[in-house]
Every structure is written in structure tokens, then in C-alpha cells.
Length: 434
Ligand SMILES: [Zn+2]
Image 1 (cartoon, rainbow, N blue to C red):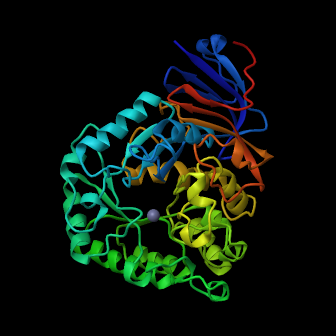
Image 2: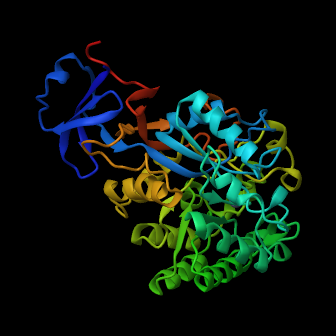
């Protein structure tokens, strides 16, 4: 038997409780735990800390197989554990593409072998992410990886008929299509948000309507075939309005926002530093404010990182030729604390919903997102929310260093992450005995 006693921490509902974990499960929660197992438990001093359920990221690029120079399942899992995550969904745009049962099972097994977080592979919607023929959706769903989320992320499923067929197909196993909303005909060679700054810099603009037109179309398609749609990385005020309209009509749509779109704006491109080049692009302050409001009122269901590692040579070059993407697993919770909690827009209970409960529900990950309650799997993140840290790209666990937050001071230090009662990240955790 292994036992941990998390002592003196504050739960998301602002009550101070001790939590006893026996083997893989939370076995007691009380002001003072009295169970006999507590006597032999290793005590984790969580005074000054918030104790949250393990975070779940529905949008991670782990790059394996094929781009192990950027990230591997192992290095990405380490970054996830350090950021407080106990589960990540691995996007399908690998080499080869995760469009068969064979590839998703390979990624799933690599995750299990690493054992630092649950790795749930996302299957491609179309073969080779080419947007033409549906991939082996059924075979991936019935594989050992039990895929339920499908996405061509990186590419948009732009053909309306292909999108319709995909939405219809996944209904038989309660799957969901996660759309990267980007009309390719409106974004040829696009480099950054279309607006005042793109004109000034002479960079080809990426209009908000390229995202919003696909969001609107797919919401109508999902409603028409009565299927389930998830919108990846929403970035525009107009997109938030469309999702709000759809939800008011009872349409089965969910949406995510990334931490970087909650904090950063397109004027950062004036530095010409490609660390700020991302797909979809950073938008305006008006968009950022609409995204925060949408996340707070539940229009946007979850925060997802879109952790997108790239090797130095793909990011430390001129803007036009640089890759799109930013890493984000290790800084996500801190950015959410700064933009949403410290600004009083959201409570910690809402953070638990947006970063653990809701993403697990959307992904169908029944062993995750169970909250802190007796009988739940002991997936736990302990955070010192009063402490600050300085982001340093040279100290990340990820194999890539393309963090847009380098040098920034952010609130919230993850002290310990636990996956089913096993410590997967030990920051400055203070074990009192044992
Ligand atoms: Zn994407």
C-alpha cells in the first residue's frame, strides 16, 4: 500500500482540507483526517497552496512519431506533468499522420510506457490530413487507443461535404470532430492577423472572417446532422458571438481558447520575432477581452494549450519563413491565473471546470476530470498561487524552447503533480516524513 496525506491545502471552493490518498484513489477528505492509513502516509505540506484536480489538455502536439527533434511523447509528458497536467490529447499531424489504428495505438503505448500523464491520441479526420477521403475513423475508435476525438488540426477540413460525412460518421461511437477553423482560400500566405499592424508591417493579413466563416458553417452542419462539434483555438470576438448564438439555440458545440490568445496581442509582431508567429494568429485587444469574457461566462468551454514545439532553426529565422506555433504546457495554468483569476473574472472552481472537468468530458476521458472527491482517481495538482516565477526558455522540460512568455514573471508555481496516486512532478514539494 502507498499512501500520501496532502496536508493543509486549500481546495478550489476555498475550504482548507486534508486529503488522504491510498494507492490510486482519494480515500478521505476532511479538516483533520482520522483514518488509520494516515498514520503511515507520506505527508505533503500544502499550506499556502491550492489543491486542484489534475489538468487535462485537449490540444497538444507531441510530434512523435516523426519529429522527435521537436518533442517526444516522453519529453512532452514531462512538460505536461510540470505544468500540472495529468492527461493530454495528442494531435494527429505527426509523420506518419495518425490516421490509422496502428499509429494511434503506437502513440497510446508510448504514453503508457512513459507513465507521466495519460496520452489520448486524436485521430485524423481525413487520410494524410489532405481533406479528401475520411481516415479509418471506426478502426481508430475500436483500437486499443479508443479514439473519440478526431481532428485534422494544422489543416482545416474545408470541404463542407467531407466535414458533413465526418460529423455523421462519429455519431455511432459518440465521437467529436475538433475543427481547426481556417478557410484556406482566405489565408493563402497569411502571416499574421489582418489589421492595422499587418498593413504597417507589410505582412500578409489573416482576416477574422477566415476563422468565423468556418465556425458558422460547421455549427450549422453539426446542427443539421445532429452531431457534436468542437472548435479548436477560438481567437476572435466574432467567433465568440457565433458560438454564443449556437449555444443559445441548443446546438451541440464546444469551444476552446489557448492561454496565449488570452494574454498576447498582434502588436507583438512589430518585434518581427517569430516566437509570436502562431496559427491562428494573435489578434487584437478587443478580441482578447471577448475571449476572456467568453471563457468566464461559459461560451468557451475549455482552455487548451495548442502546445506546438518547433526546433530552434524553424523559429529563429525571419518571420516569413518561420514555423507557426508556441509551446505552452508548462505556463498554461499561470497564464490562466493571471488573466482570469487574478483579474477576478473567474474563480478557481471555474478554472477546475475549464481545465479539468470539461476537457475530460468533451474528450470522453472517464478516468480524468473527476474533481477532488472521495473515490475519485488521485489525479492532483498542487499549486502555490501566491508565488511567482520567471519563464525561462532554457529551463523548460519540453524539447523545444519556443515560448512567447520567455522573461515574463507569472503567478502560480506547480509544486506537485500526481497521476493516480503516483507523483509525476515534484517541484519544491516538502515531504515531512518518509
Ligand atoms: Zn490548430
